[in-house]
Amino acid sequence: MNVFRRPKSIFSRLAVPVLVVFLFAGIFGMVWLRSRITSMEYRMGTLEREKVEALKQEKALYAEMSSLLSIEQVAKNGMKLEFPDRQRVIYVKRDKGGVPYTASLKTD
Image (cartoon, rainbow, N blue to C red; front, top):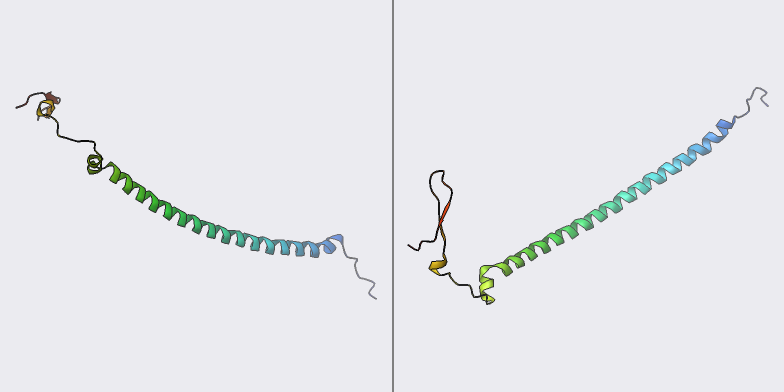
């Protein structure tokens, strides 16, 4: 029996369990964080695919809209487009100088 042996302090008795708890908490935190990052990457991939599909749909809708608004389509739908009378046409002439634009109702 050793007479000069010191009794263990409260710090040394608590240090090992606290360090073990911190170690397990750190490992758990790293695993949880890595799983969250992986799930976010999958979600970003899904959202990126949805974005590509939405852009394709947008382009298709713009193409359909432009075909619906084209002059040929309007004429086919029976809007009866025709040339105006020459007497109703207004000619705008541009002068070379600093004079403002002029309009004329002449039918030369």
